[in-house]
Length: 122
Image (cartoon, rainbow, N blue to C red; front, side):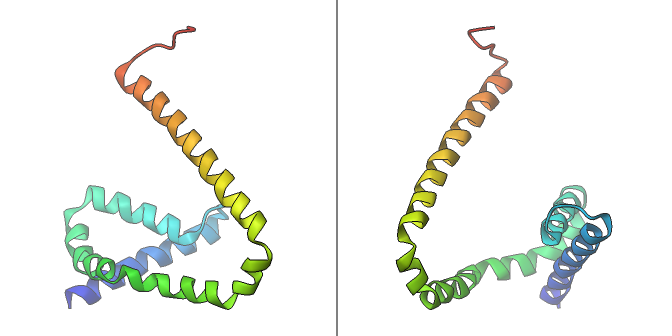
């Protein structure tokens, strides 16, 4: 019964997130809003953590099953991937490089902020 209670609670958070995003016309996905609300509840309340833990553990143990639909989608649309391999590859490579550069820059800023170090040109 613990799993059922936990999965129900997770789905309720997703539903509340979806409803609140639609009512408030926010530009974010409803499940993301539900996850933010769940995170806040987990930080503030131990009973919520205890209720969700069995369902979360069970879902995480079967996480690899969630990749099956993506793999099937790749095989179904393989001909399109073969036709558009250059723009897809270019986008993946450039996106990865930009992401790594921005992450390094943010980490440098965060490191300076945490240590209180001033920039040399200040």
